[in-house]
Image (cartoon, rainbow, N blue to C red):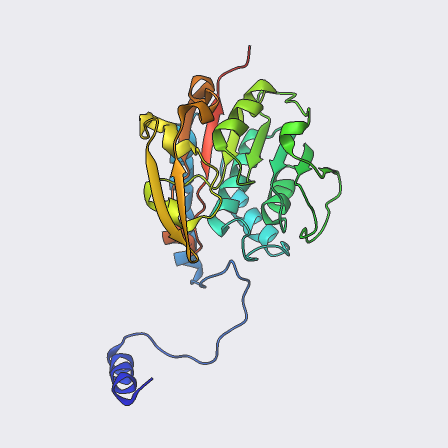
Length: 282
């Protein structure tokens, strides 16, 4: 800082109503602030209102409780992969945890494990489920969890099928959202969460987005031949939307909703996650 900037900074601090109460206190990466108990309870209730409203709109069981949110934060304190670079954003893990709790599935599939933050989250939320973990490599996985079937190959080359209407898949593998949805439908799954699903103004954040993404086919927002270019780390990238690349996903989708932002309550980043409910397979 030069002298003028230091002077301005000191003047702002002198006028601020925020107190400096000492050195920083060590805290888990998911804990962005610490509030007094009454304020904390009000913020949790605000989150629950948002969560329950979304669950009702999406046709999911409206069962989220204060205990569920407290269980989530306790779980994250043991999640060694949480907040690793490239791991599922904090608010994304909240939605995955609460969705798995609400569905109580017999089978959970996750494709794209990486460090294993969302993987750990889902296992803690649905310990009763048969869980299948897919990735082309598990070299970055922090730890293997008990009771999980690890398969080092592409999910599309496997034959895992749903066993109940509550089973679901989470795709975080930077692979065509629409193709994954068609594959899940063909195997009897009704509930899917897809990540890496950017909309028009978010595509520039990716080298390998899962295009065509759900955001592109909802409400027919993109037309065949639509093209977008963007800069990414010194390279110029281009994507052209093709109806043929959507695998007829619209025909098997009953409803699709992007998870609402929880950032105002948690301080954590949101994920580009969509919840997708599929039609019953024939």
